[in-house]
Amino acid sequence: QVQLVQSGAEVKKPGASVKVSCKASGYTFSAYYIHWVRQAPGQGLEWMGWINPNSGDTNYEQKFQGRVTVTGDTSITTAYMELSRLGSDDTAVYYCARPGSISSLPDGFHIWGQGTMVTVSS
Amino acid sequence: EIVLTQSPGTLSLSPGERATLSCRASQSVSSRYLAWYQQKPGQAPSLLIYGAISRATGIPDRFSGSGSGTDFTLTISRLEPEDFAVYYCQQYDSSPRTFGQGTKLEIK
Image 1 (cartoon, chains in turn red, cyan):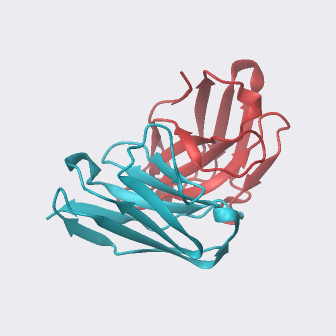
Image 2: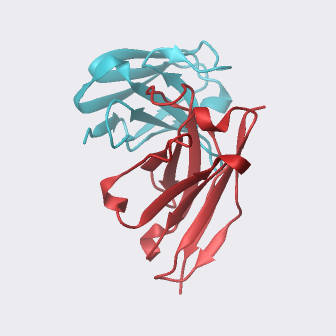
Image 3: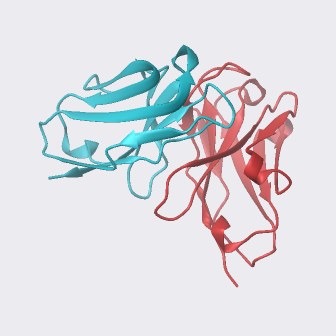
């Protein structure tokens, strides 16, 4: 079945970087964008950006520009989200998500990873 | 960016009742590029409605979406115990793909 499986929880110190992986299975990885969404404890959902695994093109929410890098490795059907210069307000659950429509067609997120908790603490 | 405002913040109802959740956009969302998600504690969000009116796979027909332009509604016709959760709307008409702040549906 179609699924996204993310890497495990991380604890990082302020100023460090974190890299979260999202392993896709059950579909053609290169045919669908992968988006990243985060959720701080007790808060709402915040969209971070996407990658087109076929081309490597990316698009990021402006507030994360310069700090976030989303990449994809089609050989192992895995997407990555790296966030640098971490602060305490980056403590959140990070989700990868996949639209229902292929490539650039706008769509909601039909498939979600299970989430990865990232804790930033000194 | 398109700001989505959901109301009410919290909705207290009993099983069997009808729930009406609102999502208002700061500017028109074209082509009904609006989705609704349900999130239960400790779980990832799950898609309920996309294209403003289309139910996602496996979603029961007590869930329905309506609206266009700047005003959208999620209706749950008869609440089941498993429907008590937090609901988010999201627009995917333009970047950034913004979410509303959520409506918590709680048992009265």
